[in-house]
Length: 139
Image 1: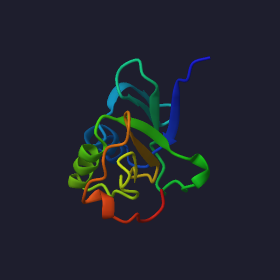
Image 2 (image 1 turned 90 degrees about the vertical axis):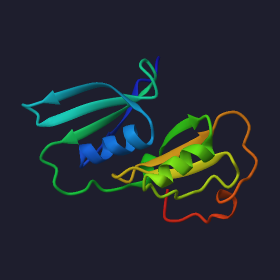
Image 3 (image 1 turned 60 degrees about the vertical axis):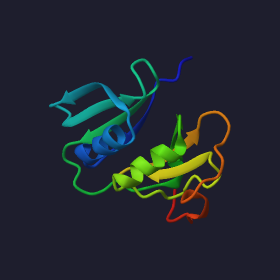
């Protein structure tokens, strides 16, 4: 058995792509528009051939999808958690659980999907402003 992808529904495909591609750094690996079914599927990954996130955009969805904590979260290993959190924050993304421990942080996509960021290898030494930054909201 081989893990393929995780699917999440998105209300605004452009906003979701801005978050996952432009801000988080994933790459679009493939896309399928289905005129008859009135939906678009966009597959993203860290690199071609890696496990994917499938963004499902139903064209006629007007209301936001409900958010349930039972989904859990997506998780990505990152080379430098401080640099990525700074880049995300500079791009307007709220760091909900800052990387106070140099190891883990949480953010959310525009559709309120929790994304966990984990430092590759050992935790980095605690560093400001992250070490004293409080958590906020839910993740």
